[in-house]
Length: 612
Figure (cartoon, one colour):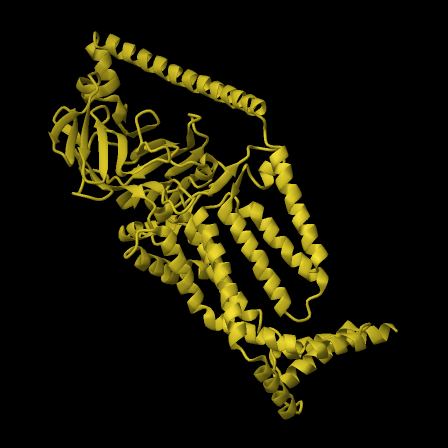
């Protein structure tokens, strides 16, 4: 570009900055927007309160009915059978805990009411609750004789209790159902054993037992919309890889095969239920809009427990309540690490066998994640240096041949096919591969895409500060100017500095490539500058860790190219090209690609001549 072009781009940038500043909402506009948001929140709150009130009314009506039935023991027994003695009672809860987890379990239904991760906080620095009694319910339903039993309708007896374990029992005469919960000394796992004794004749094995697990997922992070699109069900059929249902739209799925586990996956945390003998086929998972406006999504599961006919049951369930940390999930040894989106095919391999091992090595020695990203970038770029060096040499040879290519272009300016044939002949004589400059760069693309998958999903960056970024897992806003029409949907309501630096460095890198590449016309040069500008809006809402990495990658790349340019002797390259031309008599073997290009060019010439 010439000086006038630079001045023009500078003026455009200045106008954009001025536009953002002049159109910044006034205090009055901000007040109007706040009143509007408050009105929406009020409507949602009223709707939520209405739903909760209706739920409370129904619960009171049911309690009244139960209390009335206490006066009629026959009616109570008719409704609850042998379990009627535990149909009415007073709810209380016990707590079990270890170094990482704290669970509250109610005697009503022997159900988990709250799960707290002790070592983590939400973005608002509140305790991380993967579930709580206001947004979550779970129970088992089964049929026996004429009875349909829901375990949450009964007040279970607490048989045993310690800091890390608890046993609950529901009686039916001499028969009973028992839940045994147990935590290890540390970690995020919980085991549950569901036992029955003397229930073989009372439990209809053909109808089975269904575990209902419904959770209105709480907001844990700053960006509600991002967390919503990252929340869904993952599941794993026996002898198959993990799969998932839509993250961006609501979906209901009946699982077609036996299922080893089902995971309620959020952006950075998950709750996973695993059956030792697999859930039966026909289990149902479903995503829906949240009941509360403060939550992100509602996940509902109806899991068919593995029940054996005619015998007492001993069903083993294992739960994982914890972070989506790759190594931690991999240690579960059930394929749970697949809930982290590392990319398919070669991109996933790059992450699993190169990027993550290097990252884990660095984090085992360093605690500053900004420095870790810097070193990760330097290591990856050093590994790629031979490709960069080869690409530069090939591009330099093409640039040295530009005068001859320009002569061919001028001589055959009205015949593009002949230009291609002459250029191919020139490449062959000079011993230059026309794709030598771009192929090494294409080989680097899997790493760029792998990093794009890994970094935003890496739990380690969550709530890690670096420089002006207070959290590397979200964008690094240095100026929030408010939501402006059109601009908000394209760019956002803020300026991310790492994204800005990434864009500027990409433009510099593009300029260097255009200057070094032979045969690129002015129109193509201008087009090459458009993509970085478009990426400015695309990446503005992405994790600061990702845009910081791309910025560093650009800086290292054009620093490498500058160093290589100082190191490479272009006079020596000219001599090599001249020597190749002298030795090559035109009998050298052609590559399959060159042969195809020549055949296509000749066919084009013949077709053109026939038309004349």
